[in-house]
View 1 (tube, rainbow, N blue to C red):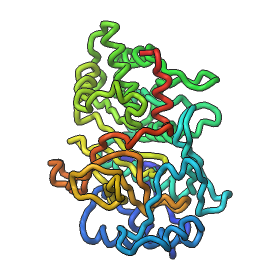
View 2: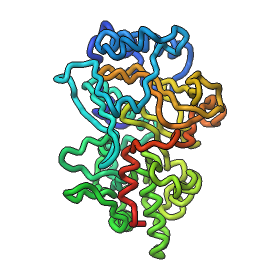
View 3: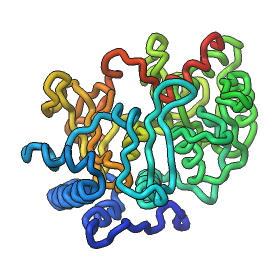
View 4: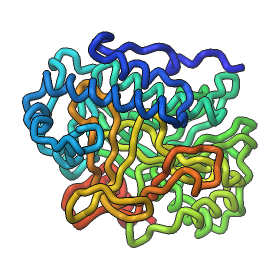
Length: 385
């Protein structure tokens, strides 16, 4: 049995009376519990968080009063792009525990503000899922290759924060970053990545590869172009990807092909390769099961909205991804419509042991000049692969 990880420690809502159901929901230890009791608790928690934001945010109060009673959980829809242009808080500025942005060196940035409860509860959700998968290993050192931004002064990117946080689940022997801080931004270092992987192969510690899938793919391509033989990273190595291929859609490959190449060139089996979905506007973790489906955890609900009417769509149809969770008390982002096109499917269609619905991302909606952190990171690849 692993010792208690600090990220699994108790964390308390700002107001135990007003947010009792929110506390109870976020305290659930089984990440994929499903049933009438969980549904009732979720509805109660959403009513509490709606009331919380309506009392503290004039913006949300106006939206909430206009929301039709038939809407799921009576939660007004707020598009993620709204947070690129507006700072809307439901807490005093002096209660902001963490400030993160969604964008890199270019593009409009979502400004998200977190009180201690919100960021700690989201981190604990990640820890619950890692614990369930057996990925919290305080007794086992690992070597990290992070396909994300090397920490630098004033860097507030959500992806960098997340990837460095994920290093807390196993002690680090060595850490290498793919996007190196140059003193004037960041630069992708493909040869450094190849050298790190070759060095890690000779070590007895498992390797954890985290971050943007595009950069991992370009590293594998660079290895092949250099004529390097396949590596066999130590047993227990793990790949957890996130951030998507935005900005490299023309070079994107299928997930199955990427995973097969990771297995072929790095020796990591498919069940130890997982993609994730998340955003700075909605920090609930969506982490693939061993069948590579993004199941909704107990702390959120997922809907698909028509791109024409925003009405909810049935299973299997493609529309805007709509994510709902009552966990957030700092910003009225409990019901966010993303810029991603997705489809939702019933849990039993996956075939794994999880019963909650799962979704598939089909790409970004429309053409926009707004750029995410993945876009900015992708720009560093120009002329380098």
